[in-house]
Amino acid sequence: MNEGLRRGQAEAHLRGSMVSDPLERMATGDNCPARLQVELTAGDGFGITVAAAGSQGENATVLRMLPPLSPTKAIVETVVQAVKAAGTTPCPPFLVGVGLGGTAQGAVELSKQALRLPVGEENPLPAYAALEKELTEALNSLGIGPQGLGGTTTVLGVHVLAGPTHVGCLPCAVSLEGCLLRRAWDVL
Image 1 (cartoon, one colour):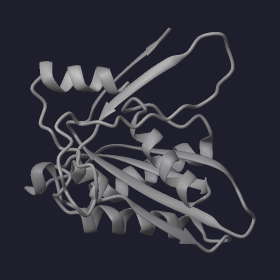
Image 2 (cartoon, one colour):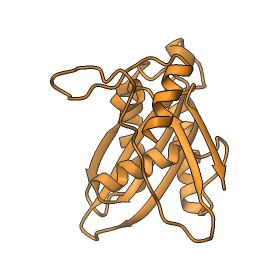
Image 3 (cartoon, helix red, strand yellow):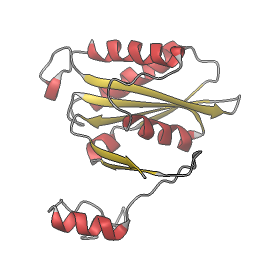
């Protein structure tokens, strides 16, 4: 993974934006180390997804630990507040990933996975598909619009992924990525 990243960075003349230490801020020069997440699934093959993400979307990530019996309205308010707070930093129109459940870390991972789903693909569970539609309408009514110039297209898509969680909590994570999110996948 790291060698592929090094070669891709050099051959494609990508900006070196990885630092080796968060306080020292010394550039690694090759964008390494790569971040690799492995997920076990059923079947004989495997799939690879690559998503090159910038810091603007990363800096807009929000995690909120909601009370366990919070109504859907609290989730909608959390997502709307996250998008309002991000403003134009992640280059609207946005893709919005929402992760519900799991642990704090798990909810953030779910929200990042949700960003990789194809735009326009609805959650197969009706309650989550309805939540995605409600969120899309609420976010597009904010009037932020493309590049923050106003309008009715603040988001291109909202995807919600959920996972099992402890009965005593309701983690809600929101991840944003600008419309230029670059991603590719293949099944081998």
